[in-house]
Amino acid sequence: MTSPANVVLVFLDPAFPDGRFADASQPQLLVTDLGATRGDGIFETMHAVGGTVRKIQAHLDRLAGSAEALDLAIPTEDEWRRAISAAVSEHRSRHLPTSAPDELAVKLVVTRGVEGAPAPTSWVQVSPAGAGLRRQRETGIDVILLDRGYDSHVAERAPWLLLGAKTLSYAVNMAALRYAHKQGADDVIFTSSDGRVLEGPTSTVLMAHVKTSDDGRPVKRLVTPLLDSGILPGTSQGALFAAAKAAGWELGYGPLEPQDLLDADAVWLISSVRMLAPVNRIDGKEIGTPSLQKELTAELNELFAGIQ
Image 1 (cartoon, one colour):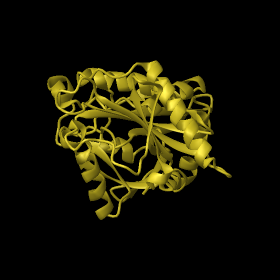
Image 2 (tube, one colour; image 1 turned 135 degrees about the horizontal axis):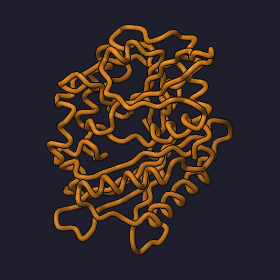
Image 3 (cartoon, one colour; image 1 turned 60 degrees about the vertical axis):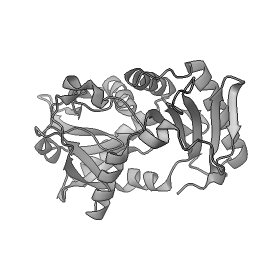
């Protein structure tokens, strides 16, 4: 758990061009805020390395898309960028690491505020990236498959479910993770009621196959579930796909079934702060071969490290 002493808060406030700093150890929201009482709001979490926030435009674009889905009027990109810069700079001035890794989690949050408020409540929260997530990158994770309870076409049929938006309503996602931990697993991959692979509670699913071409060259193919199946478009997945394509990988977009994951040479869960976490086992079954998984993970990590 992150101590409030290690958190920097900056609220977006028209009276403060670069944002208003607030004490994370003191109450900051009214108990009637609709973000707290109804989960009515949106967020993004970004990764900062050495003081540089990665994929910031992609996250701001996705935040804007979530805001549109929820009919929220949010601050402008310039306002967000100024507040992000102020928060990251302040955190580094207070807690500049003396050794690697110099990693921060940068969270953007917007709630609808209190009933009848003239504008949403918006803030930037900066804290150290968790050591547990870094360990998962290095050692890999065990996951279980869980039925999310919707079919893969529900997002188109019922847009009010907000399945493509990153909302504060994460109670189900957190319940899934607690259930996985009770089963001795680290994480979850959701499946649809019609048997399609979807996403993790806080991540995107990737898998890879390596084949040999007619002239003896290895052909590497990176695949993710269909983006129109009610999953959140992954900023990390999108950036890594672009880098992998430039490096000669083939790309694919589902539809995927659980057996496809079990037959893959490697599977990962990817997110902005944890980055690539290799999946060692799914429902207790080992995935791929450790040596090939390690090789592919190293190559993709190198590509991912070059993304800004």
